Length: 159
Image (cartoon, rainbow, N blue to C red; front, side, top):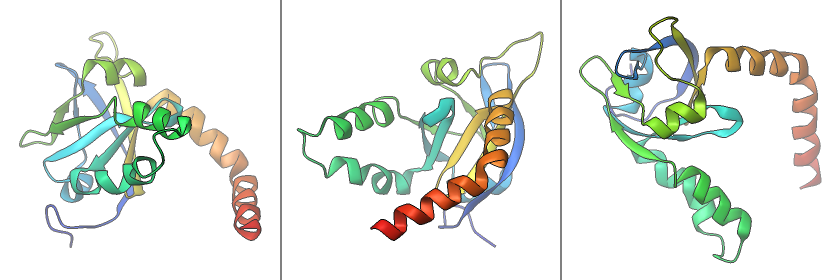
């Protein structure tokens, strides 16, 4: 069993919702690995990216080590680091999502309808998706999984 704050693998898919106060409760199995404080930032394809605080440097290091003159490295740092927040969950793992991230990922609390979110563990990080966006992305992945895998194999063979 992974103890609080110990390294482990962030895996699985969990459904939650945004509740009053723009709070999202992180699932217990993910919290065991994340700990109580972690980094939340914009992710790609309209999701949020969640990284344990002790893994943040590893994530940004490849961009940080590039030349300042490299526009793609600067832009990637702007996107990821410029929108990053260190957050702390309460005793039930609830975190208030910062306004800029809520708007970016369409995770705004609405009293008239639940805003459901999906947590997707991807070994070293978690993506948090507004549920309808995840449903659309998951359908794309299911339809194209084989082609994506073949493209990765072809890239690896060329290297």
